[in-house]
Amino acid sequence: MSNIQATLDSALSTIDGATAAALVDYQSGMALGMKGSGLNLELAAAGNTDVVRAKMRTMDSLGIKGGIEDILITLDTQYHIIYTVPNSTLFMYLVLQKDRANLALARYKLKALGASVQV
Image (tube, rainbow, N blue to C red):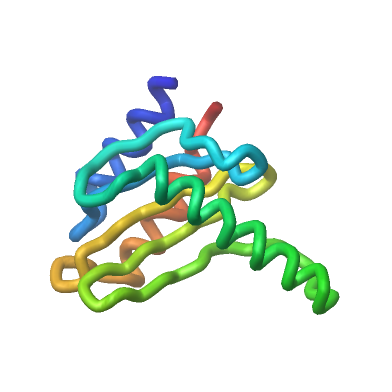
């Protein structure tokens, strides 16, 4: 569990504009770890599990091969990034404040953090 918390701590401390982060199992919809503030992360974990599952079903229906790297949701004042961890049923969820975030750098750092997650 310490690796999970360290990963979430790193996301919040090294990614500009990050206010909340979670590591979620999209098979169960359960958050393995959560850190940050500004929204109900348990509810966000369950809701974003539905987003990931819906996209996977759509890709399957369309015959699109391969996996999801990330999903970006752009709100008025925030970015929400759902990064699927390769070769697992996990995704990292990151909330960024748009006025303080560099989206390209955030995606790059999130991918590196996802590669280091050990459960």
